[in-house]
Image 1 (cartoon, rainbow, N blue to C red):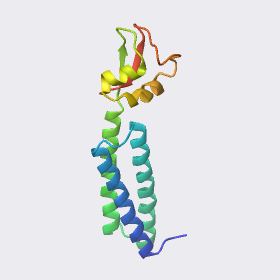
Image 2 (tube, rainbow, N blue to C red):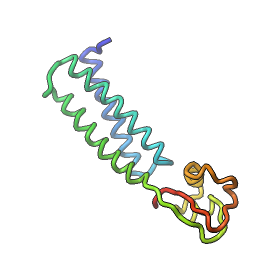
Image 3 (cartoon, rainbow, N blue to C red):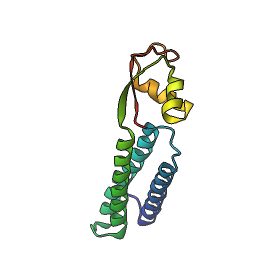
Image 4 (cartoon, rainbow, N blue to C red):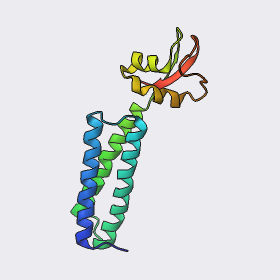
Length: 142
């Protein structure tokens, strides 16, 4: 069902607010992982894509101010996605001594809770509490 003009304006305002909230939260470092941030960005982009189609259908104008605003917002979200991709860069590290993933998270990120990110990247590790020296561990770049 095609939305009314009033409904569409409200949806665009909500999409802009949601996208701004994602950007603000990302800038403040409030996401617990790159995957969580990526999911938030993807959700906003999906909503914007649907709204772009609705704006074109309802008004049929490529130069409509709402359409222009949505396109600019989508472009900013693409910029945020590039930051996410950069933040998602991984490195391989050969352990020089026996460590647990919690210890590694504290050493590299100063945040013990990020050990789960390292565990997700290293599913082949059978004992995350005791990783011998010489093992290569993949982790997100600092």
